[in-house]
Image 1 (cartoon, helix red, strand yellow):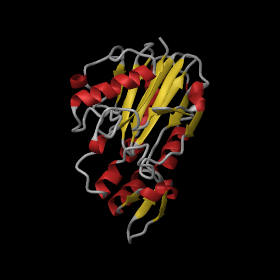
Image 2: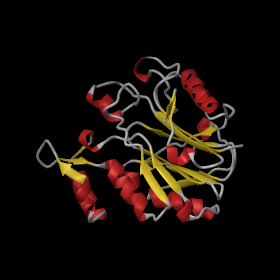
Image 3: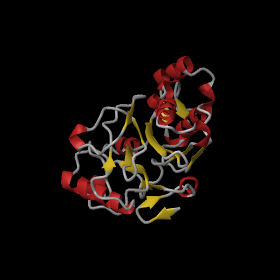
Image 4: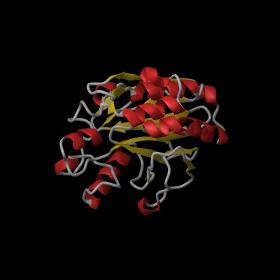
Length: 260
């Protein structure tokens, strides 16, 4: 369901005590390449614009402006357990977060990679992960689920939703990627489609992420099936910006919180 600035998942909206949003690029104050709801602390956008955009996101979640936390994402499998907000300059270097603290929004920044929001509503535990191909390959999904279990979640109760992600027709990969996938994830070659160029392939990142979620044996995993690259009106895309030779790009924020 789309509600102004954001998209909601019925699978998460049905869970009692949760608030979440896959924010689009609409409804902010940023200009130019960042038009308009850029939440990227690592972008070259005007910092005051980013701060206002993130405050609007908090308002959309019904939370104070200082309750949205984000990571310094490095395409790792590292997970942080969050107990309180931290300043933008103190962001941990990691790619997933978990918490059982109400009123704290876990926000993942993406611009083609997969944002995954997790919830065990009954257990009062949530998580959020940044899953590019490297993180999905090296275990960020499994690490997030394990960290949620450490806070009291039960695997069979966890619902996970994959937000807007670059789709297979828009995601060409080269021979080094293909070789690494075959070496480190045998049997996953089925997510490689025929490429337009020799020695290249089209990678199904959403399909690969959903497979990893299935292997984690959680209760339910679904995708919104929205492509960042193919929808410039709603989504930022690193690859699209690169193809257009643009100097920078905005970041989408996907966030989840336990209701205070």
